[in-house]
Image (cartoon, rainbow, N blue to C red):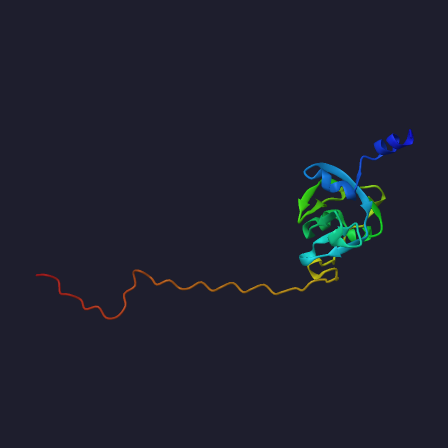
Amino acid sequence: MLLAPNLLSASDCIPVSEAAKHIGEIQCVSGKVFKIKVGAKGVHFLDFCEDQMACPFTVVVFPSGLKDVGDVRRLAGRIIEIHGAVKLYDGRAEIILNRIGQISGGAAMIPPLPKNYDVENRGHYSAGHLRPAKKPAKPKATPNATATYGDVEASEPPE
């Protein structure tokens, strides 16, 4: 019985099943990443359950955060501890991962993304395409306000 309090104080992380009770708090949540799902426009979801929709907690990594976090696909199958603000989104608790310092333990040693990783292309690698620069638009000629057009009949000077 004496070991249980010591174990709890050694790690202040809560399990994924209790994350919904801590909405609005900054917490450490611990769990095993079951799979990584890449959603629309390169958003990565770390799922902690086999059925994503039944899972009470998820971790979201937006494409803009991938460069600071690294290759999150390597976290599949690992037990991670993630620190951050627990938010409620679509009826589920979540933490947005936007820097590598939010992950602690052995999982923090994930490699950076490959330089040619294209998040918009759902995990495919692409060096990209070079497009030629657009030609600058030609400025339209503005008429000269002092110019005269057509024949102008001169009037005779008064005598």
